[in-house]
Length: 117
Image: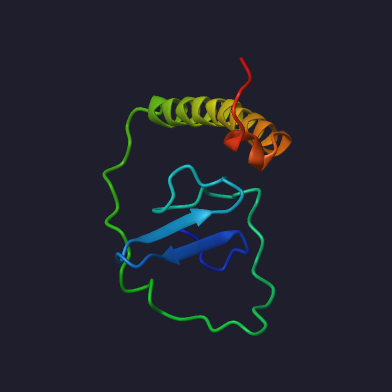
């Protein structure tokens, strides 16, 4: 089964370079952008699209489907890589927040004052 474009969690974005990204917003499609899992627990039929125009731009430019994966350890490896990136992301975010707090505590004119010896 391909990506279920009628699911409310399906998202597609086209960038200025022409690259199209297809994904599941709740991260339940490990083989995105090619297919959703059979009997997905997160599948919800898109109820309505009030005010939105549903176009056909992405239907003509489907990505080429890769050959079937024989080794199931590939998905596990990708999950481990995602977990590692997410854990490092939290550390980096904490560092950036600490730097911002430090910058906010110092007064802007302090950098222009001469230090006393």
